[in-house]
Image (cartoon, rainbow, N blue to C red):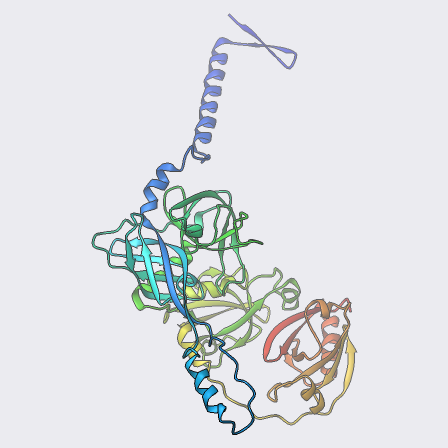
Length: 500
């Protein structure tokens, strides 16, 4: 017996066996759809169980510091004629009524932290305990423990403390912050405005935020309420793993407006491990100064897509110099990891073990070149580089001036060197005027800048730059790469040649 199924106003005849097969297939498809829906992470009905589990491992941090606020202003010395018999009397009176050493005041502040080892290791922000004479860690049950600083890192704003409890403490562990996605649920626990044990929830609003807090900015942005006092507290995923350390907020009036920032766990873990082992950080050091590769720079060196980190300077005693890396090289890969942008390279290098030998792939003269580099230690290099040496002043060249690409250029003369305070060691072509409507102005070139190189060759007079422009246009180049010095700071600028 056949059945009639009406569909789209048409009549079809379907055999019972075919109908049964169709129903089985439809049921299976529906089951798969429902299974997929069940696997999707929806909002939890409650955070209560999670909060109950995590709260004991989150601590409040109270710091005290003694600050000198200057000498208290006492009675003023009257004007007396020289040699007056009252002069000594008033001087003695003034000295006895002036508090010695000025006034000292005790200041307190509050923050948050979390326990990562049962023996009493506590993580917080460096700015929470900076300048503190006394640090107290307050547990969930109200127990107050004196804390000592094991180590701190200003660059990532992380500090590691130790307390000595009478019994094992509850702990939390780090998760993988790299797998967290925009839109994932997160929970923040801390001590906002001194209200310890406060729990807030939200989502990850953005990843890889740079808020100019330090050289390794890679913040997680969240809309979970974070306020003053939350600093140093943990940001959890729904598994109860720490995926961030709450550090900063953007707020016009100091309260939460839903824009908070947390240090990713994967950044914090390596720093905390070094603080625990050495009491300080030991970061890898390559010995280069770099800048962003914009589309014009990429085009000018034949790279195509803008990527990597452009080497501006190479430290004369650094690992990069010893390996053969030079200014104008663009670092594309480091230790097998792609350098997608300039800011990524310092983080990759810093996370690499000191003394490790790694492969560095650079773009040079239109092709990839590989170098083997043995990394130094950043902290030791920073101390060594504080020692500066003076160099002699070169003999100045005759001045000549020209205009091109919205720039007025001149050879460096003694009056110009003095006017723009150019150091004697700096050679090149000085910019004396910039057209405010030019591409050069929009690229940040200003009067007083010195063009050291044009098209990867050193220049000492304006005519050399004009020659470079002519050759670049003849070769079909759209941009010319300049190396510009501004008060000792060097950077590359690619100027488009089809506009002025």
